[in-house]
Image (cartoon, rainbow, N blue to C red; front, side):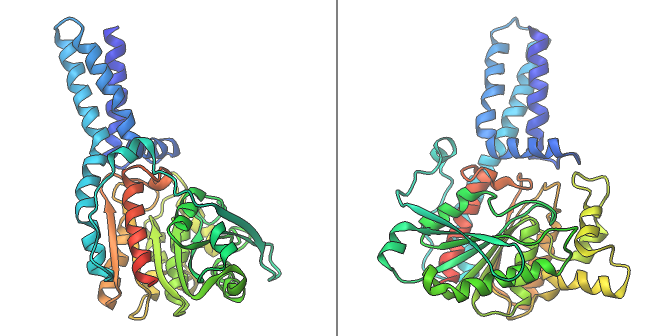
Length: 385
């Protein structure tokens, strides 16, 4: 029995350490890092239970070792909650300093929400799927409050959600719960599709995002969308598209850009890509751009997909969210874009999560999910006024 307790304690410690260090380059360890970071407030029950079991045993060296392991595991699982509470205490003030707006409301991490989730708003959400008549088989899912559509309320700002998936996979149905929550906050949401690599290489994906924006503007009256108030929101590969399109389009209708755990300087991304990482990022970029940046044509292609290289004084306000131990997209991508936006004088805020990994918002009510929710809500309220 003592050996089993020690083995379970070692497993708990190993998983909890993923809130402190980057996970090894394997898909399954990345998923364990999401589990530890965003569900650690549940997983902490394991070492606590093991500690009780060890304490009930005979007083020997094995019990002491087991208790120490349980304390270390519990500390790791609780680290995200502690860190998130510290960040939440000043997050609203930081966002207000970056983007203006009314005086920030009191903020903090909702501990009850960690376990019970966020209560529903009670609003009914209507989702419609539209095909864009542009010769390419692309569709978008449009989310809007049913009551507003029926009552003919004032046109709403629209959040254009661009999915991730390494540019060769993923679809517009990713993390749809976030879209419904944005609708409950007063926005319309368009979750769009784009052509995937390797069949289609850049700039096909940029053209698809621009075509979706043009379609939404053309149908703004029918959809009750304000054609001059769009915000691009992208995760991972979608975040790269959001900054590249948002900065490159020079469209005043794009009021803001939100990018979660994304690369933004594609020549730099190529320079740090590896074939032995969890996603074989070298292969992903070869597929996306048709090869490495070793010819003038392809180098120009990489540059035209780089929000960091396209950023200028007229770029829209930007919210970046990235986990420091992210295994799939290095947090340096967001740090470097932050420095560039600072140089250009573009309003911006970088929400750095010390424990979080790629896809942390899989749990919208976890420590990272709550912080991202708060930051996105305040950012949207300010840039779409």
